[in-house]
Length: 303
Ligand SMILES: Nc1nc2c(ncn2[C@@H]2O[C@H](COP(=O)(O)OP(=O)(O)OP(=O)(O)O)[C@@H](O)[C@H]2O)c(=O)[nH]1
Ligand SMILES: [Mg+2]
Image (cartoon, rainbow, N blue to C red; front, top):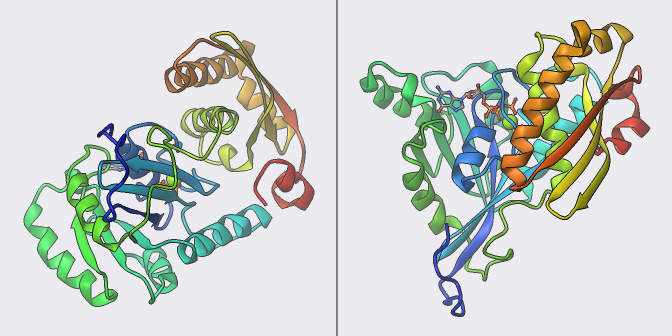
């Protein structure tokens, strides 16, 4: 939003951090993107898409909301990467003023309950019941809200559709009173604390999540090796890191077609996101066991 902030912020100005939590695939990153009006966190219909803490900032005349998207909390962590992702979730909930728990409408299973157990007791938690656009019969919502209010002492419960943008202003007005009185921490036009290099790598990873079969995306990471700006043109070299040579072959595809499609889609998103032409070159490299290797994870920015 671009309300005028030229004048000094009034003493009533509010600014604070809001963590977006929940089990994998409930729509946390979709919600973050919709709230800030820009795609800064990648999304897919596969669980465990988000691997990092990603900040999205929304500024208006009276408030600055600093949203923190987190990886979906997962019960089974089979390698160091998963443990690192879970640590991001628990840490993020401690570092914020408000927590939003995202659930899918009409669903609160064991994986959701596991996250509810982690919710902090000493700060407001707002429940956002997402994907209400999928509900044929909206009258089911009221009993579900009632049931959920017994699961945890939520400060408020707001049904939303992140995808369609429904009830998001209601969600914002619910959050605002819980933010501390502060001047804005970020400039008015800042939407994220992540740089273009990070977003470029993430957009390549998103295409892998969206265009590959079930298993492969989890054994993949992406790193940007080179990012050079020449006038309006960004020249980006990225490497897709896989675990096994067979995965490399699948990503490249017959005659290189798959990799070409991945790179083209990622480049188009980058051009839209960065607002300028992008030259993108992508390689695939095999580095077995990277997701369990402390040094590899550090180099890839996970720990
Ligand atoms: N119908 C519907 N689908 C939604 C809505 N919000 C998100 N989705 C879909 O749900 C899937 C998961 O969305 P994400 O935003 O990636 O979910 P996430 O919670 O960030 O998932 P992880 O990062 O894996 O934890 C995607 O296919 C979204 O398009 C919604 O309001 N309605
Ligand atoms: Mg996500």
